[in-house]
Figure 1 (cartoon, rainbow, N blue to C red):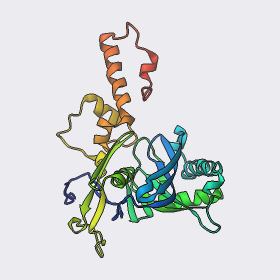
Figure 2 (cartoon, one colour):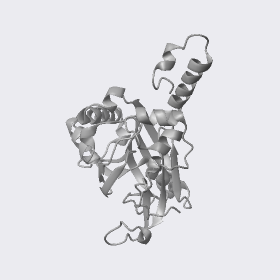
Figure 3 (cartoon, rainbow, N blue to C red):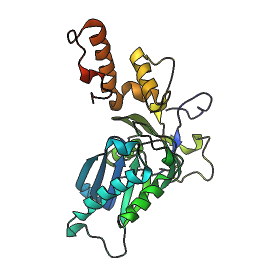
Length: 290
């Protein structure tokens, strides 16, 4: 297991998730999820049937995020997300109607570094994966989403804020009680694992009854002289929105692999006439290879 004594020179955040109990497979009811963490976001509705029923039904919609919203205003991004969430709910049949006075429960998967202050609140540490909205850094992302849902007149309560890696760990534990770690290899990369609560130096207060705590490593920000960085990796980093940050993520994750290939091909085209005497104009457009 990773060790949490990492303050001296380490780039790993090792964030406390406030998730001290993972699913058992006995859960029942209707739940919603919003998954924001890359160039698309997903809204989901799941019906859990307990130990014998398992996953009764699952429906979801995937929505691309316009590039201008990834670097625009905070309200514009969250209004867009809340509007799509409201549209998803509006298409429900009568079988999903809740009793009067009861709000829909939403789990918010927010796949960026967050300093959590409780299971349902946390402030954004920094953006990754091509997002850059400075006014949101240091703000509570649950508060921002809740305000946007109110502007859409959407009756929904955020009951949990989790990183996608923590969500993946919970999903694994739902079907297998021995799952202890999860890894994301997608638009970005990260890992989470179950730690003994008493082994966490930065934990203050009473220990959770379970004796455990899920740790979000934020390993995409790992940086070391042992990483085999090439001239293409270094050039991509210098041209990125966050130079010097998320180095491990930039080497291996989906957000950047196509761009690394483009840079390699461009150099081969310029120096070795890979595509003939002229360099294709499209090859000079950053991030044209997804």
